[in-house]
Length: 253
Image 1 (cartoon, rainbow, N blue to C red):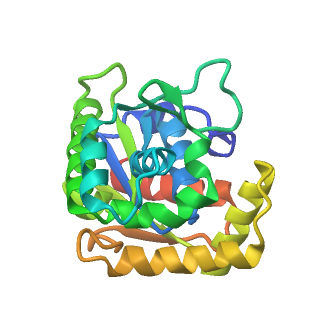
Image 2: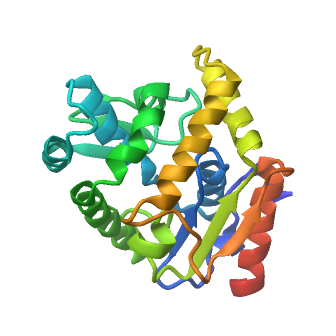
């Protein structure tokens, strides 16, 4: 079955989405990035995890010794950073979905460090940072969504894509899972990277981040009213992909 192998699906690639934009939101470690990446592969769309932009700003602030509580300094930093996202090269096949560059430096895995996990929600809540990142995200979305780039179509993944960044997206998904399951996933992801963080700490970080993301005044984490909700607590990545593709077929196939 094409879906199971996550190969390009010619029929689905011709879906008449105008513009060709799919928005996926959800909390940390919910599997939204995995779904977005595999969905982009199946449709031959560009995969764009917008959260990496906030992680890049957070990593840069920590690397430069800027306290995450210094809103003014971080806002200035966000405006100055050159953040670039591109498809992995042939020598970058290490499990990454995309390569993230900050001022030309590959920070793809550095921005996944636990210290970035603990601080990114603080940084991403700053209005000036969100404004700068949102403007860049919209520019990228429309360039690909309207077929003005080398590839027609884009899957954007984040926490406020369907509500703030691209509320006009013709397809919106909200992906979620139980906190304990999300913590388990993140624990094994960190372990695979050689980072040994106790499960209890990972769970505490997940719960804390959920609270910050959902209670912030600006762009709180929530599902768009017209988003399709997917709970993948007891689903594999392939089952979640098949569910999303079935929804697309029913609507546009």
